Length: 77
Image 1 (cartoon, one colour):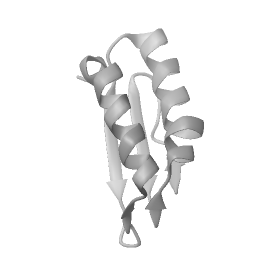
Image 2 (cartoon, one colour; image 1 turned 30 degrees about the vertical axis):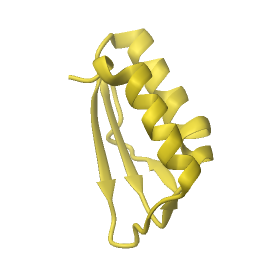
Image 3 (tube, rainbow, N blue to C red; image 1 turned 45 degrees about the vertical axis):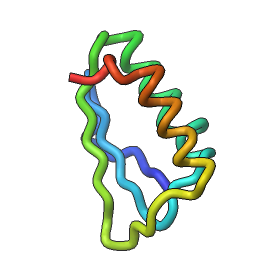
């Protein structure tokens, strides 16, 4: 699961990962937020907090992370 934290503001994205990340976490939560921030601010800063219950990524999430890195790798400060 991925949760957007209240510290997210301006060009800063702060999210918390817990349990297992899924492809839906990327498609429904992280990617729309990232694209919104990039459109508004250009490059963004991102902090991903892996909490003590974080168990890793499902296979589909690994693929989504790879695609995100290829597509948006230069969008981060």
